[in-house]
Image 1 (spheres, rainbow, N blue to C red):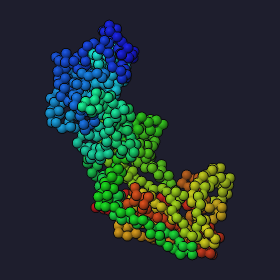
Image 2: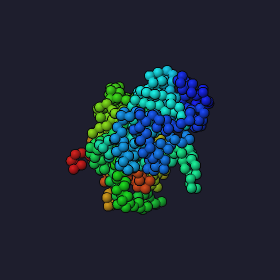
Image 3: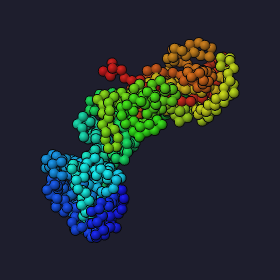
Image 4: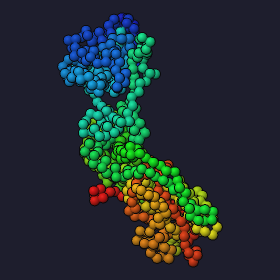
Length: 625
């Protein structure tokens, strides 16, 4: 196909070009001169072909052109196509579309119904600027509703529809007559609103929608009675939720996504679960534990954070629904090694290869059994990817694939994620026996000793941690924030780096402070729940208030490990939620070194805190009742 600007064709040359089929496809803002394209407008050409186009013409003169989705102009589409600006119209012949259906939508007078006619019929069969047809190539044009359409010049079709008569020139564009209307295909964002069984998710996502008029992209018209008018009004729909939470351009036809979409049934069932994880309270009062210079424990009362009932309802509503929606979209063009996911067979192949899948929000889904305890941030284990996508081939939309499902089969860790806080970033405050500093240790010993056996070690390990150093001959302690904790049960772990500077283990207490519905519990000492926990002498620590880390040891992969992950609380339930308010309120873990003077040869006071991990537990059926 040759692409030329029609505005450069003049007089007989334009007539000859149209007759010979020498065409142009342009995105130029300049108007076509009357000498170049004939004396009639596009609208007048449509009227001149009333035996074929009377139904489409009636629609055009019955609908007022929209400035925004909510607001129409005083001009009909007939007025628009009879004006000075340049358009190409792909007009469907009489009887090829459901004329009575669209007339019925117009006659309702309901704005949403009329805009549906504009978007799906009128704007889907026209484009800005001049597009003539000829040649043996293909080209993709942007329709007036921002959809893409492929023209096959060899087959004389647009988006698979036969062109009956092409290249009817006009002084403000081009008219083509089609056997059928250009098929309308919604994108994912639009598809949500096409089915009643998707009302729940559609209502939530569209509640963040705004429509904006773009005066810089629009064409200025004449000033009427002192008021500016716009001949060509360009609007754009924006949505803060899809942009900032999902991070997916669901309304963009130049994108490609695979999206899991729960029906109302799946939505209702899942929302009943997620709401249990987001129970907020009316008043949070964050207290800070510390000590005086004399070493006396003290409590600094913090600032109160108060919510009204309306605000509590809003928090619960937003976060419980966000927990369902945030990770529904995936880039369909590529995942692991840029392998596409466009069919359920593609998803099953990912399952078989045990690849990972990455959502647009940044959560990585991995096969069950491939996730280590200490790398759980933004990673969720999945038993069956195809089940998560609904086990059926998707509906094709203009920007991807919609996997609609009546059962929400995402793992619960998707909406109740593992919390993994690094010791340095989670550090809040110290007691006066502690001199905390950021630690960064590179373990690269050529040999190590494990269980009195000398081991050759050629690996290098780098860790960052909080170094809890004692001030003098005392036991240090430090407090750590727990961010975005939900109202559910957790297994709580503390990860301690082995202190190779002293070549000794650590012995310590762990305290926790958290909110109940009406009160704040401060410095509750935890009891060791691990039946395999032992001290440096080999004695069991189960049921005691002490925790002891191991020295260097072998991990599950048979590699030398310099960290020890200790279970400090099992099935610990937080009655209230802190998600999204962690700048003001949060639970606190306090780690405090302690051992007897007779145990100095077994333990050191300086503790290297690597991280604190909270692994949530799913609500059981009995607990949900």
